[in-house]
Image (cartoon, rainbow, N blue to C red; front, side, top):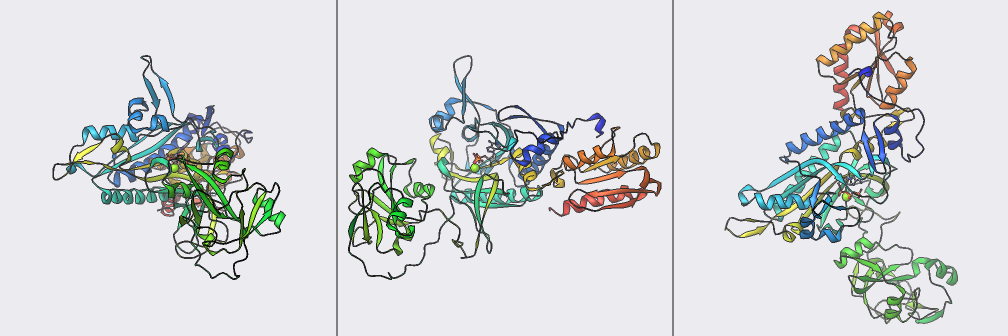
Length: 573
Ligand code: ATP
Ligand code: MG
């Protein structure tokens, strides 16, 4: 590609409305432009990076045995009513009516459409397993689009859906996708972890998110420094401490007057007590049933764990009216003693003695509360958020707390959609069986943005070669010097002849401008043809991620460039 025949509108200034580096650099390098909130146009160089990620994804999906299809963006409401998501899906689902007053939506995801297709087309167990995928535009009316194409409304996703005869088959399909994703993100040159994630309300019980490690990530993750355990913070298991015998005999249960003292901070200050001697009683309404969570004062309840344990669709903290009904007191004085509600306690409570709780009485707390003697709970469970100092739940190793950008998600769906939409096949005995499904997504543009977030310097992007808009940028520094232009043309032709993706900056601009733009766009290999070096019969080669450049004889450049490129690819194999 010749720069003079291309379009890379670079910008010097840092755009004021771009908060994160990848957004700033994609704008500055002329890769994207905003049309309106959360909606972007990909300019040529941005599109090339997108296509490179797509190609890697496509190759690895095909290699894994998945089959490419292309489903429509617009979907009829009926399918979403069948699955139940028409009501359940929030405002992210963009709904509209067509001219016949027919409810429609723009697909934020395609479980309904693919399940409808498969229930009509696949009849027999003999046709299974099958995995259909597409690379297609999604729309989600995100409440707060931000970070450029990282969290936008209209975005390109690779989504795949597997169909199996049973859970064992579905496990196998999941594993195949997990491995394909590992290859994809490795080939994209990213540093990532597959973390155990919460499956939320989709209903499956098992999922992994592929996280690109980056300080600017929206997700908090933990990973073990000794074993491969990694998890989303909201999912991370906390190892139950082994029970210890109480170090003090149980004291006498007594009420303490604590006027207007409601929070843990107020209570620790008022009673001069460390928070780990207090038990918080959090009252929830779980699908309409009252249930209390007991958590040590210095710990934080993990609502996701609590909700999953209860198997509830929805949980919310009880409002003052419900709290008064259950405890007989206003908010801030709930406690487990004589509480008329189901109680679930975090494991840590087991090892506590003589603690403080609310008294279920306005302006009072209880001191010297003890398990079993004063109250008992329905169940002990892992209910709390993991925190600094906790050890790995698998190997007891040290944990690292960091952030990540979710670029991919693999998910076991079970029979949630096949059941709701009556999608069945005939088994060996001729009986009807529900399909076991899995779904697997990759954000294509988010992957490009995540790569930039992970790899850049003060001069611009440092693209991994596999997803860079071009592999080589060729800079003839003096366009009016015949020798320079001829030598560059020779290298350019040689690159094209052996399939190297090269951009030749043939603009008649100062060398400094060419260098700056090349660095900004992050093309991995730079080949400079300058008047002075050419007099010695040399050209200069520089790898974007390295500081030093090297002079090589002009005659050797055509062979050296492909070799350098291969070496860069080999680094991310
Ligand atoms: P998130 O938790 O980031 O909102 P999600 O869990 O809703 O994402 P999935 O439904 O699992 O996302 O979608 C699959 C992939 O699509 C994600 O892993 C992510 O890479 C990408 N993706 C999701 N939402 C967006 C968005 N608003 N903008 C860009 N990419 C997105
Ligand atoms: Mg997700």
